[in-house]
Length: 489
Ligand code: ARG
Image (cartoon, rainbow, N blue to C red; front, side, top):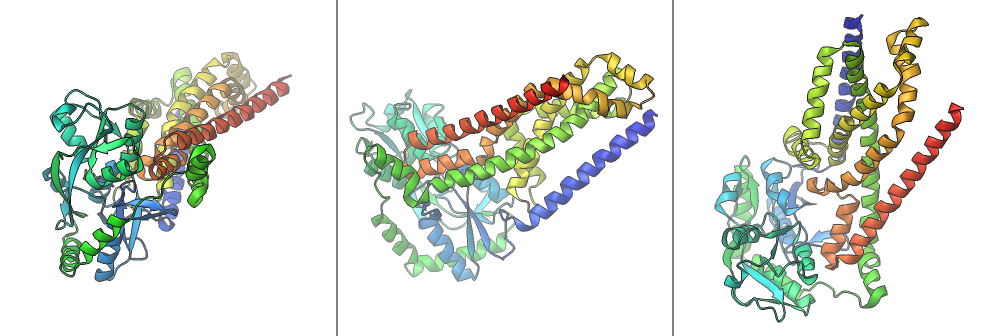
């Protein structure tokens, strides 16, 4: 009997696994997002909030790095497709083979050279200090002991940490600058050209004359792609010789980001209407809903299974072996942050497999949510009076059938509020998708922020949309609860 039940459950799990893998393969075939796209194009990673090297204009990633990479590709006879992600992930993406190369104003450093290969340098840069006009901070050494903002994972981050102590880390430069404007930090350390642009746009900010470092930018290529590196070097050398690189630099030196609108309506227009920026929020919303809904589905199915196994083991002493694995699963999943799980699934488990990022997120959040749902379901089952099971059994119903037809419906009703809570958490938790370069709602807001250099409106809009979704979800759950209660009578 126990044996049979165990076999049946194992079979069910295996089927679930087969379905998940099949879906993954199907999804993986069409979605882009990994190195050497099906069309033979090279995939380039960048963090497009770094004027003039990479930034977004009319919904497209453009800039010096992009033009340079495209020209390099043209000379090599391949197209280049750009993937926009957090700077934190750019080098990891190259190393994991998620992209073919990265051009993102990346400074050549000994540490990075251990992880990736660099081409010959194509530009020089400096880390500089951005402060408010009239600030007491006038020389680099004044940064000792004050709050310094940086973009996480950059050479500015490393320099400040080494010389002045832990910096305040932001996910991109414009956010660090927004913090400076809001008085959250006293200075920002970043690369010279983006710094100049920030100072030009904000009359209240200035760049200190004395730079902190001198650096060189190069393109990062995977260690396992020496031929690509050689071909890129050849193209770069030719572009330097015939003046293409100098021409590109001169061309971008004259450009500037459009100034922001004045007044309330001007700011609204600038943040949401201009260049169709509202689309970042709309598209992001679709991704957020897609991921949350699918993950909730996985969570509830897998979670219910685990919950049943756990409570069966607890109440009857059977399924000990399965129960052990379920507990192990809960320990691991609940014991580690979901961001870390997401990154592990993306970079390690699916490291070299071409798979859709939306799917990666669905799997990560689904597996994570299942652990919490499992405990909710278990508590629901345990709360159902034991007499219910006994009554069912004494009527001659099997254990599985009584569980499904008698215990589970009651348990479900009891745990509905807790489940609702879990889905609300899940919905908001997906806001970390930006870590794997997914453009969800939160990332959509961040992209607007990094284009308009305004923190207030984009963040408010994002918050409002989440709030509305949660309010809607809560109303739906309340309705369901009421309906279930009515059936009771
Ligand atoms: N040059 C600095 C570094 O390599 C900062 C680069 C930041 N690039 C970017 N696209 N946000 O660490």
